[in-house]
Length: 75
Length: 492
Image 1 (tube, rainbow over the protein chains, first blue to last red):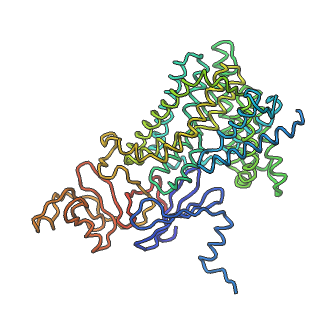
Image 2: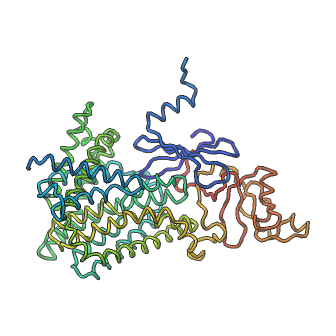
């Protein structure tokens, strides 16, 4: 796995990837479900419950992923 | 079959609407499909949409078959085998406690021996679908106990196959003990044959039904599954096992993912019909007579679940919150209980089993999300000595495995008995904490100086552990959560 990404198997659901952002205030985990859906868990410093969970279909995840990766240009 | 499309269509639509309304408040769907069948069936006063439920029996069996086929196809063999012995012990404890208590309860009811076996399974085996949805809805996928919960329900699915293999011959009405033994032997031999096919013949089976076109693959798949299920039923092993096993076979072929995707909508529709048809066979008038046993069964299930949660908590070093979450999340009962009820009705067992299991599933459907959501109140009252480690300060905290700072752990033990800074200034402290990065010892957040947190602010070292006798919990200042390593094998 890439540096700073940790995998946890979730039997029957899929895999969870914990991403080390190197940030002291936020961290994210991505759950890739076997049915293709993704859950993006966003944690803020000092809270054990996620501050936001965003559920995305495979298609939506691809769009957002392209934006995040910088491969999407509008003009 | 009568072409009573109006009644059938209206019934499925209403079931869907009811279930959708339930989903708004996070209730599971399965009980609502059943409820629609109960309310609009011939056994209940008021409008009757389907007067002859037996007309739908073929569709209902298709639902049962596809439900179990899908279970087999998506069974995560590798994840289960790679998860280690501890999980099997935890799952074994869960199954043993729940099914065992169910059996005793069934025998105590005095409805009969076979009836007790059905009750044991219906009370003991939880619904994977309900549990999985709860975990996603309650945003608990990053919790330390979640892989444990998922592991338990997956192993329960496996147990279901063995249980069905035992139950079907029992319910087949064998005349003598010898005949019964023969049928049970046959049933397990058939399981072994299908396991062998799964191991060695999967490629061939894959070739038989493979096609580049989704249309043909879907048709070939349904044909094969229904045929295997039917043959299984003919030789006295239930159609349910046949479907489950052929699912395991297909799971080992390269077409697995396509099959999984294609079968899902079919399964959803026909399984809903299966639950509906089961509901149609229920007479609400019978609920009164079974109400008391159902309430006792629900209470018993909650108790055995909490006990099993404590055992899992002990095995995996979870705190009160984690143990409570295990017990109260795995509480949902649904599809498997209804499958067992259907088998019992088909075998002509005591007529009270249907309404008993229906009411039981309905009550737990409402109770399990409520209880799981409020697990912290249970966590408050679980005494420390029941769990592996002492969690006095942190019993209600969520333990997370999603901490990405675990690689900052360099030192884990210390025999320090004092907070050096407090000693210097002559202050007192309550408890001691140790920095897991450099080993520095400081006092806890209840102490006047809170040197442990000050150390974190100064150095940025994120993780501490408790140095109290009998405590080994770890806390991450950055994440603000109790943390631990993920279970199972770590991979690079």
